[in-house]
Image (cartoon, rainbow, N blue to C red; front, side, top):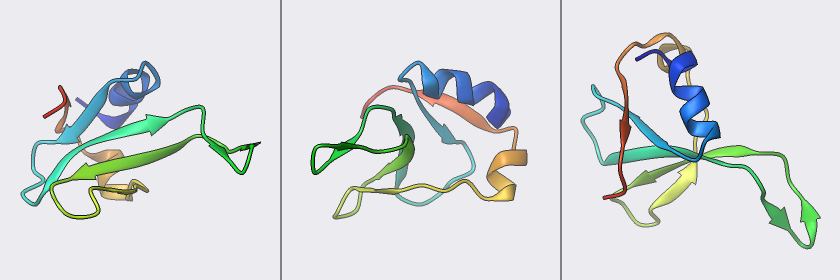
Length: 76
């Protein structure tokens, strides 16, 4: 699927990944109600990998936005 089709899934709390990613990427997800130091933070994407630390910020590239190989995944 395309990223614009994956985005509604992310907003529903689902997880997605690109099929062509060959590294340790497991999925990306949207953090919608973050708080830091008792202050609200704007929503952001995180990527779960098999590395340590396992979570990192995710900023889609233009290739990611234009790709059509996104799939929904379950927690691993």
